[in-house]
Amino acid sequence: MQAVLLEEFQEPLEVQDVERPEPEPGGAVAEVVGCGVCRSDWHCWQGDWDWFGYRPDPPHVLGHEPTGRIVSVGEDVETVEEGQEVAIPFNFACGTCDMCRNGRENICENHVGLGFMNEAPGAFAEEVHIPNADINAVPLPDSIDAEAAAGCGCRFMTSFHAMAHRAPVSAGDDVVIHGCGGIGLSAIHIADALGANVIGVDLMDDKLEKAEELGAVATVNATEVDDAAAEVHDITNGGADVSADALGIATTCRNAVNSLKKGGTHVQIGLTTAEEEGMVSLPTDEFVAKEIEFKGSLGLQPSRYSEMLDMIDSGKLDPTTLVEKKVDIHGVPDELAAMSDYNTLGIPVCNDFSS
Image: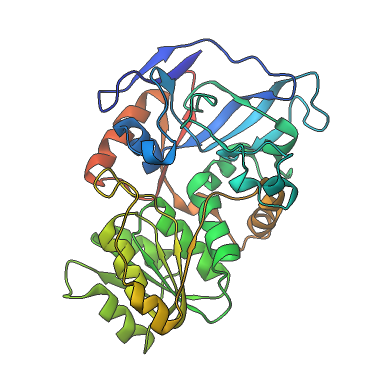
């Protein structure tokens, strides 16, 4: 089958022929219907995140935002059936550890990252394997087809968990999102649907215009002001209730924290780059004096996908509004290369794997 193969970090990616996966006893294989092209794939291609355990040994298939149609199941699978259309979280869980048993499968003690770890070849391919399929394959309701759901992969579902669960955002909250890439725009759309007054901060006007289309009540172009956090304080009349860094660089993280009012909550969604290597200095004394909370957010529990899917089904959320471009599998390397210059808008999706 065809797949986008990482053969050497930072070297051009190519579509190559690889072996089709076979289901493990507890696993399933899905034909990939759609797979988002994400900056996290770019980080993996660059060789980042070894400090996070997300650095596979080449050759390795990339891709971590798939939806699919089940084509085969292992002998121990009980609930997943051939022909089902499913959402596939990137944060594969075991289903048996203490975290999983307590509803926190997204931070499973035996976590395996789809497309980021040797144990889970990715989904820029005609087919992908889903381990522990009864946990990690989330059936889609009949009203949401798999291609339409491709926009609710990592960026969208991670933002849903961040806004709905980790913050959590309440009606009337002032929420500021620093970084309006795919994950930031998703967070803006979701926070708006939850009833917040959302502010988007970025360096590019086209991304800020998209933020307004998705519900932002105000935007800040950080290249046009001396202090982006101070602008947020002015807009909100004292600071935001909730902030999020959706990019993962030191500047956006600090600006997001500094945007908060007393008693505010920061949610860190973006992972850092090779420059920070996971470490960002923060105004610790401000956390104490203002009783600011700092929370991390990773993925979304498969057991809580129904909350997001219900909001999509009712029309309150629409991940398709984030999809700016559809490409075939041969276009994926170019989409990832464009991310080196932050030259993408919204969520590109690969929806043709046989060309």
